[in-house]
Image: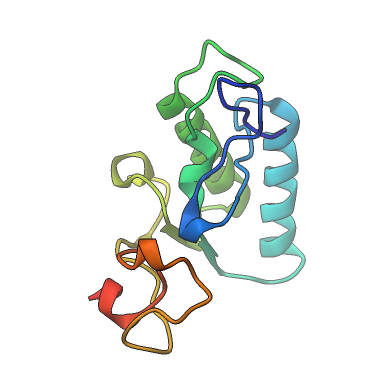
Length: 141
């Protein structure tokens, strides 16, 4: 279910110096799980707004996909189409950390800046070498 890089290891989204996995949207089992989870959030739990972050992780670089013939853009499109189908047209989807072009027609709003934070400058123990993308007011502005 996890995208693997060309070396066969889990692909790393490398966000804020941490390790995050990307679900393989080319895998029908992954899509079913995402569809069922989003549908549950909307229909059973009553959410009418979904903020989905790190969406780019579904198109991480690497050959370790269920369907290796599918491009990264096609995988992203398939994942977003699955999410929208499960949520329905009445749910407001906020897509964050998502390629803008891929999101057109699938999300209703999008945060295009860095995450905000409770301080002007990033606070540590976050990695010092990534000040431009760490959660803080400065990076968001």
